[in-house]
Amino acid sequence: MSRLGAVVVIAAAIFAVVLPFFLKPFGLYLISMWAVLTVAAIGLNLTLGYAGQVSLAQGAFVGIGAYTVGLLLPIGVPFPIAFVAAGLLCFVVGWILGYPALRVQHHYLAFVTLAFNTLVFLVLRNEEWLTGGTYGINGTPRPTLLGWSTNKPLDFYFLCLGAMVVLAAATWWMLRSPWGRAFVALRENPIRALSLGLDTRRYTLMAFAIGSSLGGLSGALYAPLVQFIEPNSFALGMSFNLLLMVIVGGGGYFFGPFLGALVAVLLPEWMRVTQDYYLMVYAALIMVMMAFCPSGLLGLVDRVGRRLRSGEQGPAAAAFEPQSTPP
Image (tube, rainbow, N blue to C red):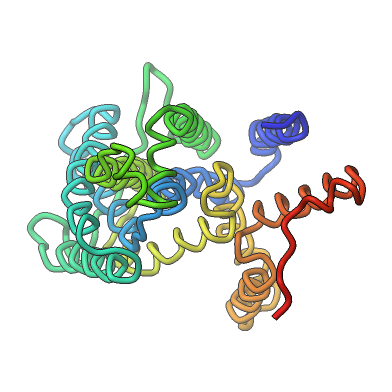
């Protein structure tokens, strides 16, 4: 990370800690939702942005994690245990879902994960004996940890923020380990990675499993945040929204999900001033942004930074840059 990037990250961290003290309850709810969904987007970025495995099932894992916590907390299971259980369950299910990725790729894999998301939605809606069906689960309590009650919106926000920071730091460490380099090799050229002795089968499964477990941990925070969960919250719209966060922020960039989740959570609220047209305006803005920066916002920043650096090097250095061939 460059010095400028470190300054931006530190400034953003200070802003995330100080800003909540000046917000009303709804504002605290929005930034808490940003922290929760960022965790799920980090998991999808690991699967899609780094490992190159297309998944449209991340919303289903958020639902599995949310229902796990929603079912365990009322029967007296402590929140830390329920939180870990949600992550472990999604890890196992994600590992199993990764097996189709060993045989199909790209849009075929997208259809497989899309079908899985639909399957989870149908189970959540139809198995009323377990999930409450369309009535959902109401009144999921917010936890008390070591005497610290998180019932107040500000306290629960800091719980979400702390969980996001810890999970993001763990992901940062993993991506800079041999595992992270293996994921990138898997995305760039799986055949070459296999020829170099990389166990592509194991790393494909691990990419799905770890990304899915982060989705489950996000759901474990989502349930006590909204305190009411029902199947429609985890339909295809959730998965598409998480995919939008990764793409808009910048797939394959570590901080892409942070920025993408911020846009996806806050921009629709800002657009409500247009009243009945806010969804049309929001969709149009996303389309324009994707047309001009298909690599996401951080991809645009990276491209601009490279051009500025090449301009500082002068025309002599620019002569050694690869030039595109005119059609």
